[in-house]
Length: 190
Image 1 (cartoon, rainbow, N blue to C red):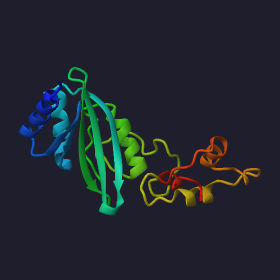
Image 2: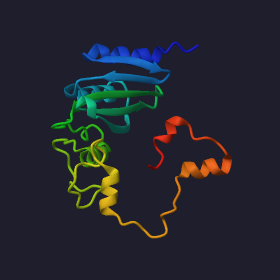
Image 3: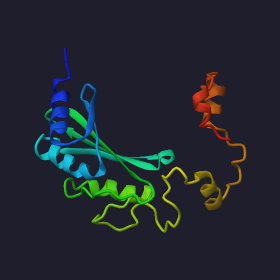
Image 4: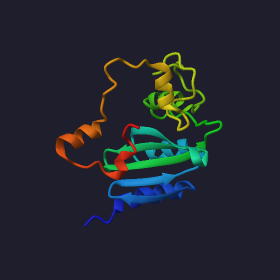
């Protein structure tokens, strides 16, 4: 029986080195919640001292109601076979986070994407400001206040012959007779 010994050992090591909150989520998954000023130190520590050498992913969650962005750094140890999630929240008003591409080169790509899609600045980040979006002059498109429908209506023309286009859920329903679950209806066309 696995008593999550390796997971608790990882969590204990991080908690002993840093004043953070954390928990074992489940088998092979550990989560740490840290102040933004501690993130690079934690990432460097787990890479150099604990063998979490693979930055698997970086992502951002927009908590608009709370006025925060949550950055999630996902690191992995190929020896321990454990994934560590290091999470932090930053203000949406002037979003800025320390650049970690000196710890992992591939962080540059993730940070450039977050800068462009959410408007988060990473001081010292090397790379052109245009990464994916060309000639973009609107608010960053992954922010929750960005109106995708309005942007599409103003930017793209309506092609003739598409007036009778059906929602994919409607087509599946017609073909299979399956009902669209209530929770999925919010994703259907208006």
